[in-house]
Image 1 (cartoon, rainbow, N blue to C red):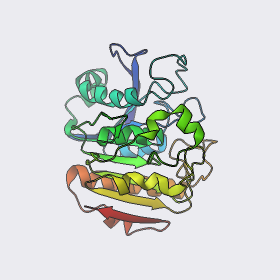
Image 2 (cartoon, rainbow, N blue to C red):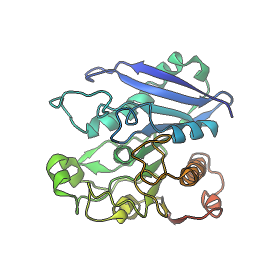
Image 3 (cartoon, rainbow, N blue to C red):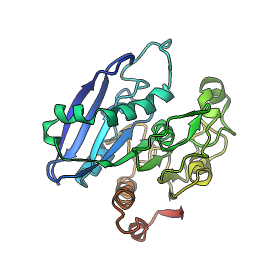
Length: 293
């Protein structure tokens, strides 16, 4: 399916230090299109952690009939905001608020992208995030941090890629610099979600709990949850954050294709009530799946 992209679409948000910029990727054809809000991580590159990253996911999902909205969060290296900006350096709360702003401003986004007018299904909205973007997605699905709930009821499903886990077992650097990661509470994260983890994703800069730490949202959150564990995958999942990026230590087009295929099947099953996504998981090797109703 032919897709188009428009970037940047600029939204003025009162009180935000800079305007909210986003990239829109969508199919040229079709109506009643579902929406995926895609939250970037915090990679070493200046622009992957922005609206310019995650092309392997955004392009594929758009080809499969989704409208993908990618904001540049305030934590992006591309913005280089001063260290004393309120919320810096991770802007964990503002990141989640960005996504709610996108839903609030869909009329304005349609006006800026006329090709989308009257083609969105606003009842079918999902969120996906990688790494720190997974933390953002978890908040929108109902996880609390520092006792704060940012759950977004308009979001019906989520995909967490290499997301954050429990507060125990964090490294000293994380404990001292990112206190919000000490207090995740998954007790109200009831929205359906697919948790994607790599069995080689130790994330030693974050935790001493090993790769299983990224599975915590599956084990600790109530409600319908599914788990996809990719064999041999590190934090880049073969290269989901961009084409040929240097920080992808486990480059594998085959692994990226697996993530593309299974996340698409999952989102279709949750948003449209189609066949169980695990039917797709029966085809292929290099991964295992688990589920909980």
